[in-house]
Image 1: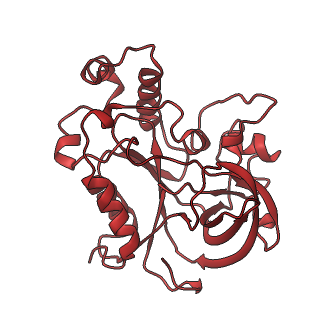
Image 2: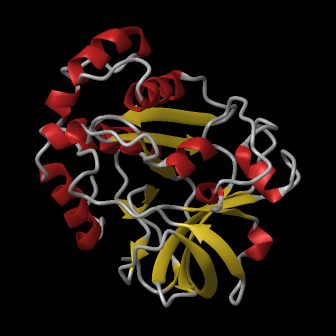
Length: 285
């Protein structure tokens, strides 16, 4: 039982994050943190400007997943020394995580209600408390332990679990450029999956969710126009019929709910959890 199949590289990455100090830096919140993935998993109404924000350029359809395809993709670059840190479960659970306690939380973290940080906190709490779409189970994990507990509850407590994340093979400050699909390295065939996305908060919080509808998970090798190499994780949602018509992916792709698959790339600090299964292609990380 447990997570003995987690690749040692990614497990080490998670542990390093957990062991970072969480003093003053953990209270620094950049309101633009994780904008693209936070927005793309909202299920209430949004309105897009005619000029699409580059940070939303992570969507495509399954028919575009082919070697040689060129796409504009946004991969956020983050500085681990200033990013919100994971808190131990005991410490995270010593604070309320509720919009009803927002006034107390704002005072605790020394943020005003109208500040960018206060607005981001309120948005995250409301999103975590929003009703899931049909066929979805969601949970906001405030610690690594709670993320693993939720994941094993969904995937099965007796399951060996594998975790995947996007890996940047080259270091670059470029966040938005043209990438070419060089290789489809792997299709991960899993009956269930849990996706966990970072959301803005003074300490690390992950929006984790699982959907009953069919999904496909891929690892692809991307080549950037500036020479960047990225082993990128992709999730393709084959049934979008229950998604809100205002979901930003439809705005970006020009499709409607249920008319097309929706795929998206994952930033490096977002995670995909699946049961241990045989995969096609090269071995996992």
